[in-house]
Length: 238
Image (cartoon, helix red, strand yellow):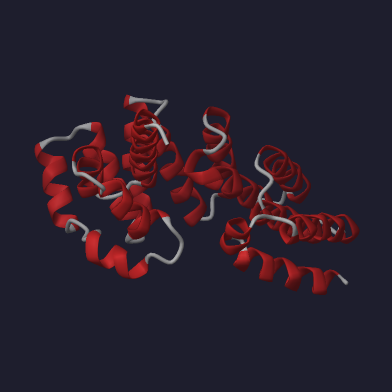
């Protein structure tokens, strides 16, 4: 393979991992290391990005204490520190204070999707599902694949929990069309089942499982757990 092509592939992978770390709100260690440390992007992939990377996470991703983050924000109340503190508070269940920080960040930069997504998570955790649905919809409108389509899934979930099951099925159908993964079809089928549309749910799952059976080996390996859940749901629908 051409060395220039290999170099571009490596640069693209490094850039992809950095963007993923930024969107996930990963620790500053990864945000700094990935661009400048050789093969840090590979370590990040196995420690954070790949499924089942738990032991690697504990080895590499040692979180900064919350008190230290608060101090840094107090000393330098920049946008990044504000959202960093908000993310830590969200993880610790301090949803009210985290939401205030996210809202403050959005007043400074209304296009900051990391802050808007975090605000949606806080709203959902506090039971304000209507507001969360609006917030996640805004994220999806700006970036349909944000958080590996997590914003799209949470948009539909918030709609369902706010008493809008039919709208939730429409949103998930759109997700399946945009990114036809087994896990997305499974979420759509569950929404159809909850909306009383069992026959449609069964057909969607049967088609998805048929696609899974004919998928390449690496796809099957990644989708093994969703496939088990899909077969379980299919049994319930039968």
